Amino acid sequence: MAYGSVPASIITTLYLKNQDIASDSAVNTIKFWLGVALLITSLSVLFRSQLASFSKREHLINAKWTPYLTIILGVTLGFLVTLTSVGAGALGVTALLIIYPNRLITTIIGSDVAHAVPLTLVAGLGHASIGTVDYSLLGTLLIGSIPGIWIGSHLSSKVAEHWVRIVLATILIYVGLKLIFH
Image (cartoon, rainbow, N blue to C red; front, side, top):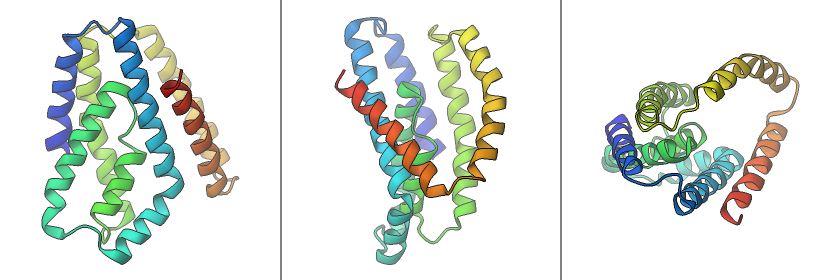
């Protein structure tokens, strides 16, 4: 995936660098793509198990195409993550489950998490290089992440997974539609 995502992230950053990203047109384009990414992510969250099961049963992907599809997935994720910050997790895992239906879920998740590190680093450095990082906001997000992780991990063990998926997907759909049809 990184063969596709890292170059796509760099190209997307270079494209953004040459745009007036504060213009109404650029902001609306980014909002639109963010909305699309959130809607696709919500579908991924809702239907991941069914898609993976169907893919395993029907062998949707010919094995000779898996390397190419993985790179195409990487390009897509590199673009989406750099432009919107959405996509690497839920979309990546769901697509990998379809492309590699016989791999263990733990291997797919581990590979996706490991892939997110260089992609996020390149996208983050790219945004820092074009001046779109608000460091006080970044600090606040990092500080808030620690209690958020603790609360989320405790709540997720007390609430059935399907309810967490439904609530998360509902929020993503609502925000995605608001961004697309603002």
